[in-house]
Length: 120
Image (cartoon, rainbow, N blue to C red; front, top):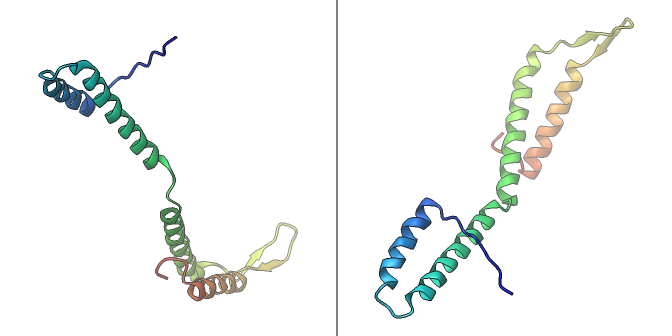
């Protein structure tokens, strides 16, 4: 019993395989050597593609920190435009401006203390 594996080369693989075929053409038993070369190249290529597909957790964390830092900057810049009180649907008012400012300051102080979030 044998297995059949069909491989469709990329543009780069087709060029390299053609170059390998010319190089192995002068050697005895060149077809097995050529097929071994092609299989080896394909395996290395697939391993590299798999490695690149794995998530980079450090880069993801740095990107997240930068985004949170930018979000904090934007929230701090928007604070002067937020009203101190907001009318409630059932009547009365709810203070949001001072609470929002205190929340942003608390997040900024935590970010500076832990040095996690981008350049604040």
